[in-house]
Image 1: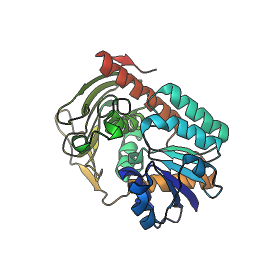
Image 2: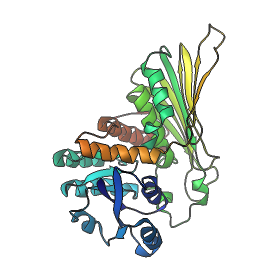
Image 3: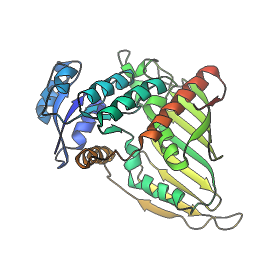
Image 4: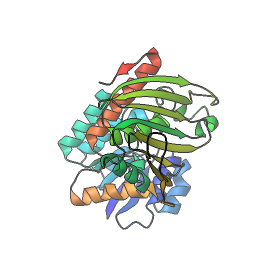
Amino acid sequence: MIRTAIVGLGRWGQNLVDSVRGSGAIRFTTAHTRTQATAAGFCAESGLRWVGSLDAVLDDANVDAIVFATPHTQHSEQVIRAARAGKHVFIEKPFSLSVTDARRAKQAADTAGIVLAVGFNRRFHPSMSLLRQAVTSGRLGTLVTISAEQTALHGISMTEDAWRARPDEAPAGAMTAIGVHLVDGMIDLFGPIRQVYAEVARRAAPLADDTTDVLLRFGNGASGHIFCSTAAAPHYRMAVYGTEGFAEVLGHQMTTFRLVPAAGVHGAAEPEVTETTGFNMLNAELEAFAASIAAGRPFPTPLDEIMHGVAVFEAVAASASAGKPMMVA
């Protein structure tokens, strides 16, 4: 059993704790958040011991690992501090807002020999596994393009004290909240991204830019498009088009996988559809984190792909600001 602390007990931190209740692999024992009063009820109900500082977590020999659900700008320093204390780290996405900070954090983790995991939970869904298999098996033929969209409504209801509404914490519109998931999925399926061209808009959210479109060019020559918004009815879609067929994952919970083989120049065969309901992506990623620690092996999501995702994010933010295409470093 991996004994774990949660740092950051907002809505998402609480979701992470709830996702592994009853798990035989990982158990949250300790919590730290900025204001004890706001977390007291949840800690009592969840059996968490609240402590007053991150130092108290780092100094606790009964804590094996730390899960951080904290503001984005804090991630790199928190990873570095935890690594130096010998604690395994699960950090919520985005890993970092800059390549420079990401490299510092990764170096600290490498030096300490800890497991470092980043919370791209959608990689673990069975529907994504089916889409990955369709791509890597060659069944779709030559890969032509990939299109992804993800939307939510939380941008409309954010209050002025919400850190996610601050431009330093959430540059490039919906990218930190949603778009980085789509970038990660595309890197997983199509490989490195060479160039991006991004536009950002504010359509309905009162405090922050809420909508982002990105055109992408991959190292393999294929094209891509991302649409993400924090002010549109919730939906998710990741679709891959090839010369021999088309496959997609659909639905806010990624429930539906659909593959449509090509049937001649002008038609398509009957679709193959797989439905996966009730899958808990948060449980899957946290139990994978625990399994990596127990086995002494890296987390399943490769860190080089995580680092490339940070470079893509940095290029997207630069492109949106400059109004022109940007090469990915």
